[in-house]
Amino acid sequence: MELLLCDVKMPEMSGIDLVQQVSAQFPQIENIIISGYSDFAYAQSAIRYGTTAYCLKPFDEEELSAALDLAREKILNKRAKLTNDIRKVSNTLCNAVWGWSR
Image (cartoon, rainbow, N blue to C red; front, side):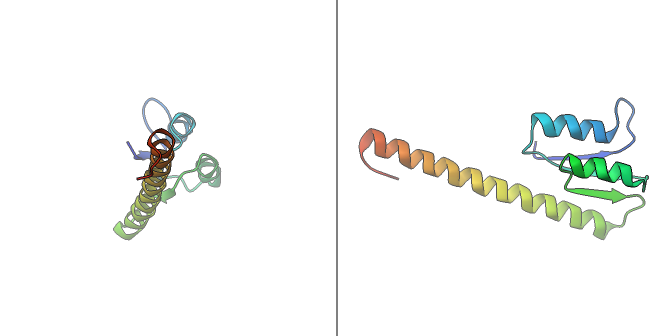
């Protein structure tokens, strides 16, 4: 999973609590919170846990689209970095074992 989209108000736990737990265990996951609450304390908590976007209801298609585009960009950047890191490790191992790089 690379993206978590949740509401602040949910039956079992708040979206803020969910984001906090997911961010602690899986920091690579981007998250977007939607909320009917404009209370700054909710947004502040979301920011503290690295939320990509905090969209207030009712939101329009453009706002959600912009939030999803930002999350997508961050995810693609993370993938590119991971691919580059894997390539570097692979080259180091090939050089160490066989004396050549890929």
